[in-house]
Length: 171
Image (cartoon, rainbow, N blue to C red; front, side):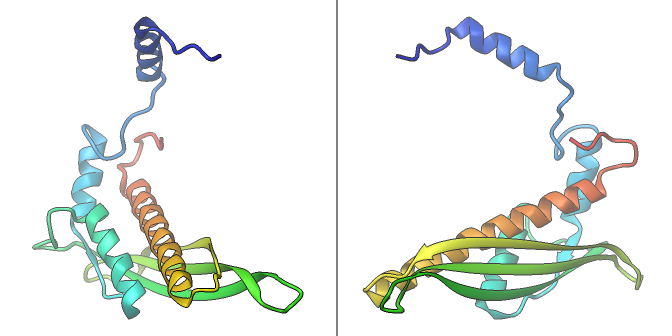
């Protein structure tokens, strides 16, 4: 049987973590500049419905207070989707599939043509192919949503690390 730590143990853990040098990327000190820089990133349109979902997630992470009034940076994103059927039965019917979403993104400063940051991110999620077409479509939709959320978090984190002030620790 596992015994939970007493409250004194939790205090010790909290003190140890506080002294280890980790600092939030988005708050206080250098993080305030990152948060401000992220808030002035204009996210360009992304084609298709999946692209719209990705853009909405990016807005929630990068511009939680709405579109920037005076954007300083432009983020362009290109999204590609592919499916691969796996776990094929002897009857040649697939029972599992992988959904791959690949994004290529570019950050530029408004009024300049040179790219400040380019990157690529890939998310692969799996879902079951069931006998019910509706259930399969629901599972595929859920896998797509998980992939879109994962990609938006990755892009936001990479932008935050890129926009942190020079000399600030990358934690």
